[in-house]
Amino acid sequence: MCGIVGYVGDKEAVPLLVEGLKRLEYRGYDSAGVAIIAPRGTICEKVVGKVDALEEALDGKKFKSHLGIAHTRWATHGEPSLENAHPHLDCKGEIAVVHNGIIENYTALRELLQRQGHKFTTQTDTEVLAHLIESNYKGDLLEAVRLALVQVEGTYGLGVISKRHPGEIVVARNGSPLVIGKGLGEHFVASDVAAIRRHTNQVVYLEDGEVALVTDQDIQVQTIDKVAVTPEVQEITWDLSLIEKDGFPHFMLKEIFEQSTTLDNTLRGRLDYDNGTARLDGLAKYMERLRNAQRVVITACGTSWHSALIGEYLLEEFARVPVEVEYASEFRYRNPVVDDRTVVFVISQSGETADTLAAMREAKLRGAVALGICNVVGSTIARETDAGVYIHAGPEIGVASTKAFTSQTMVLALITLLLGRMRTISVIKGREMVTAIQKVPEQVAEILKLDDQIKEIGRKYYRSNNYLYLGRGCNFPVALEGALKLKEISYVHAEGYPAAEMKHGPIALIDENMPVVFIAIRDSVYEKVLHNIEEVRARHGRVIVIASQGDKKIKEKADHVIYVPETMEFLTPLLTVVPLQLLAYHIAVLRGCPIDQPRNLAKSVTVE
Ligand code: G6P
Image (tube, rainbow, N blue to C red):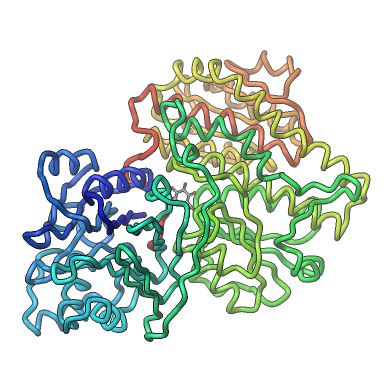
């Protein structure tokens, strides 16, 4: 959730660090800072607020520095303030530290260091690291960091510099990503490749429990127990344009519009028409476990959890396997009934969400096979699951997830097809499903043409402060997702509900000021949803309906109708969610909200 950038080389460090931080702004943060080694020593500048303010604070100062670290902070311990912003310094102001994650034993360490005479100036857990490194320092920065980390319990992605080592950055990782970018006579450090992709496509991912010394010429990696590791250089294959706005006013809108392409990418090479099934090579080793699974558990957070709920409807319907969906944060602290006949799917766009990661580890501990559905290649969850399927949606920058959601849902549709064919459905049915799946990207492109109509609807309702989203069957999770999108970026109250459940509570809220968004496509529960629409109309609610193309009858029942193409029922969430993403986007723009970096939210929540 916080961002780290570092640079060592022959160029001026400050502009490169600031540019790197800007690339990470999408992750969400409340303060920012840099520390550099200049001829006069360690210099540290921080601001509360945006990277632009930091840039302004640094403007015009000639630092002559070729090495530095920088950070955007999202407060966990201690309020967002200048003193709590990173980097943090030791007592002498020589060592500077940036840190993502949480030091769990920081209170004990702080007391210990205070007894030794160290003076603390912040409320953060991170500050203990600066003092701990100082107390372990005997002329070797790497060794001092290593010795400090041996005493630390918790998670970290770490960058450390010191005035006494003007050519060195020491980095370390445990549960919070850290990547080193290779250049010619220069090296970059970051918590996310997006920060450094402009400069290099050659990277080394640190593993948990590793610490590295990075100079302009060299990368030396060792484990925290001092065993040397040969760094493995990997190539980033995605292009820089994927993390730029490409003429769109916001990343979120760009990503909504990318969905027909990203769904194509998710599907590429994975459909087998002849056998009426899906080809998911990543799962090849676990076919037997999948075929014989007695239960499936899907665990995730946020938007990924909504895709998991859709997966439950799909898998139970076609694979006839009992499925349970759980918030990862709940799963990890319960005593879940999971054993070696359970298959646990773990869904995470970032592959770094702390709760999801912990839930995955718990599932593995209990003997379940853990299969990942991730976007970020090489992320922790992707690496630690037994096997998995990448969604191939490309970097998602907007904090509100859109294209990752549709690609996750598509992967779940593919897994449904695969499992369904192995367990219950015929080749004929399988082929019908393959044909329908193939059409989805094109159908999404059709829906995107309705952008102007959806914007107009947004214009009518953007002043409302309460919205209700209702759907049934596999479109109930879509109602939840539509409401979440609006909440996240517009800061208005929106609730998603199963349409029929409305009469057990939310109906009390309905009056002529309340926009109610229905998903009422022609599926197995269509007639039932029509009754629910009547219930809202009878109370003068304003009705916006997502309906199936050609459904003229519904016009009489609604204030506004947004039509989506017809498809097989199990694929409808992939279509019905798109207008809801656009509606949330336009309402947020009309309300003057910042869209890509909504307040208080982070793109990837790497703390509990
Ligand atoms: C944060 C993001 C959400 C995301 C959730 C889970 O809350 O703001 O957009 O759905 O984390 O993230 P993951 O990367 O695990 O899918």
